[in-house]
Structure formats: structure tokens, C-alpha cells
Image (cartoon, rainbow, N blue to C red; front, top):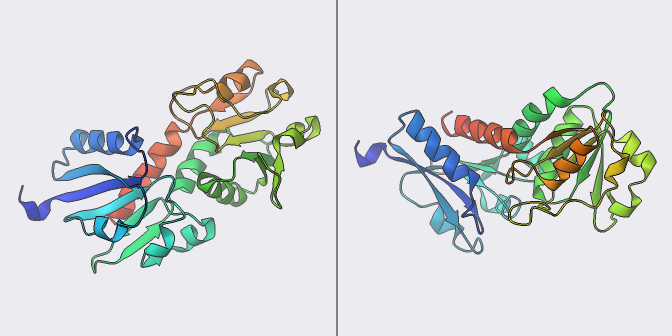
Length: 248
């Protein structure tokens, strides 16, 4: 295969040795015999060298992960309407004319993952955490017609504290989405500070974390009869949506 035909893709983030994306796309390229494609990590301490990074020869697309989903936005030439509405970018496309355009496919992965778990009792959701990942979740749930309430360590205009999540609040909000890193490997014993004894079989607990496969948050939910899910299907969904954009 000539050098001209090589296509390079990658993940932009910080401390991303654990990267799901690199393993996922490397496996995909091998499985689908896409021998001209490679996927690498662009592990940057900050975005000072971003403009140098995007000059990497053969680069066709980049995924973006924490902590740069918001910070990268003003450095791009263009943004699609959804990423503007969400306020975060997880996919960068290199256009034919050399310009960069930002998109968000996290909401696609989440919507496709959560939709089969929804039932008629779910009208309200708690979103745990207010970071970049939570923005796509908020957008997705609003599009699904589900009311949302942020929960954070500190109360803000849009978020309540964990100690303000009362029994009535838990009863009303049958969907709980963990957008915090609590419970991620290696600190697998950590979990959001909720009264899990208030959960019922009508609750759905969705954790954006995928390592471990079953988090402490999910274990608590399952112990009280709730439906639980990790973030693996969401990750695969957003990755495939990114791949479509890069090959559009």
C-alpha cells in the first residue's frame, strides 16, 4: 500500500494510555482488513502544540476525550450545530480543504444505549457530575423528552448536592446516569454518594464507566433490583458514529 493511501486517526487527550479508542479501532482495522488505517494516541499535557499535532501527515480524523472536549472547540475552524448546542466536541474531521470541523457523537452512543432500557415510569433523570461528559447526556435526555436534574458535590444554579437527593427525589427520578469518574479502575470501590437503599426495580442506573465492566455504582443498583448498564455500548456507538463522519 503506497504512502499516499495511508490514513491516520487518533485520540486527543491527557494520560490516555488506558484508551478504549485505540484498542477498539486497531481491532476494527484488523478485523475489517483496513490495513491502510492506523490509530494512535495524541497524549498532550496541554493544547499549546495542538496546531502542530493536526499537521501530522495523513491525519484524517481525531477523537477527543477528557480534559479537552470543551477546550479544543475555539481551536477548530468550524463546529456543527449539535456540538455547539452540547458545548463539547469528541470528534474532529479534517475536511478536503485542510480545515477542521468539530462534532459530538457521544449523544448518539448514549441515546442508542439508553433507549432500550427506558420504560413508561421514567420521566425524570438525575445526572451525576457536571463535567464535559454530562453535557452530551443532558442533550440526549432532553431530546428524549426526559426532565433532568444535575447532582454535584457543590450546589449551583443548575445542580443540587448529593445530600439534597431526598427519598422523594429518588422516587421521582427513576433514571440515574453516572457521569463522574467515581469507580473507575483502579479505584473500583468508589461510588457516588447516594442512598442506594431507596432504589427499586423501576430504577435504571447507567454508568458511563466501562472499566471495570461492573462498577460499585452498578452493583449497588443491582442489589436493590434496579436495571444497570455500563458505558461500553455507548463507547462503541460513539466510535462508529465518528468513523462514519470521517468517511462521509
